Image 1 (cartoon, one colour):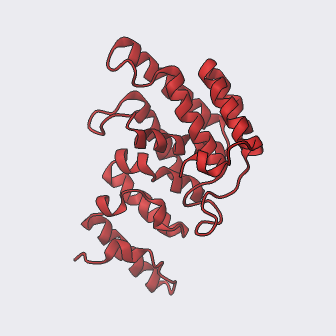
Image 2: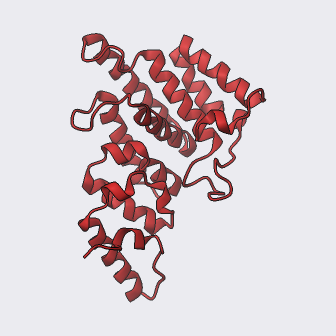
Length: 231
């Protein structure tokens, strides 16, 4: 779901976002202020209120607005436009530095916005192959790793979207998936789950379930997605 489908055209929120994106195109430094104001301008409603009323799994409207700003920033500084040339490398480095600053200086919601923006760039095909990661990917992996160390379910969920599914190494990805289960977050948050699930993750899930049963605790239904049809 794109931000354009979440903020009806002609509303104050949509008008503000369009103006903010135009501002970023003129002056990339303006993204910092736009990030800070996004929630009060577009709201914090969940993107899929019927199935995700807390906005943890699929994010919120302000997540989507900030993701759009991350994409707009990439366009403004020319990420990927210069290829492997010195200009392209400099643009990628500049962009990575800006993303890290937005994340490090932001609150939890702003950090989610950076991660959701990386998802949008991944889906657009702007970040390159996992076998030869560009500078923004390396920076993004550091930010995803930071998110996965937190106890904030919404940050963990944001770290296993399309960007995480494409670029996280298998060991980190497995532990991220189990952390979702431990936190009670639906595995619908994890992109590419069926593609990346493997026998080692199934073993880890069975061990986790056994520990829960031994402690007299309930076993999350989502674990079935990780263990079914695996020896």
